[in-house]
Length: 321
Image 1 (cartoon, one colour):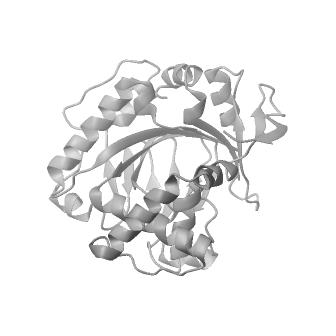
Image 2: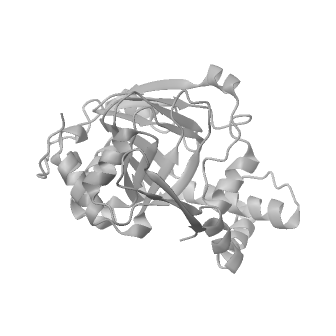
């Protein structure tokens, strides 16, 4: 069982095997590294229950998701108001749920220090790696729960704390990652609507994660996750670099050209006059009222988590944050 305490351990190193070979692979291919975060009391059940109790509503999401083997695709967002943190964890342990505590580095500075220490090691080990805008999220998910096929816009890593899961990572190129799908994510902020076909698995890299494993993959690589038959606690970390920010500007601008002007913009240059024209376009679009409305209307909240076993999801009229 996990340590139930709150004290933060401060080992000399976060990573056990961040050597020159791993540094060369960073951001270039899927890889698995060993870390020590699973030994920190910050991720004990009591500490996490306390964190949920005080978590700002704008920084968390409870999701009803599919269970491996049930043949359905489910993804609904809900609310947990009125429940204690321990009740939320107990409900997740029963099945079919996924809690994302976003931006935990803003809520509790102890997690922020943990995040900074990890990226300090990465900066020192990986030549030319200068990440910024670091973020951390804590994921608590049910036995056999699934995270559907999707891609993320920033650089991202997945750290396993408790339980076991398998992550399938796919090449960040057609047909696994159509440019239109990447543009839709950039515009709406919804990652899990990407088209997936079972034959994609032939080219996937499968990473089995247990406590103390961290998975990292190239930018925008599509991936999906299957939990084993146990409660899972994981951490996501994300970062931006100058090149990733420019890539995001291009994704937004190309999406605007396609969605609003009917133009298929294929250029993805990150410098020169074409890039700067797109940078100005996407900045202007972000200030429009329909930009914010598009992202809000893609994420309805339509259930409330109940404290009663056997009837955990209570439907409510949909609303948007």
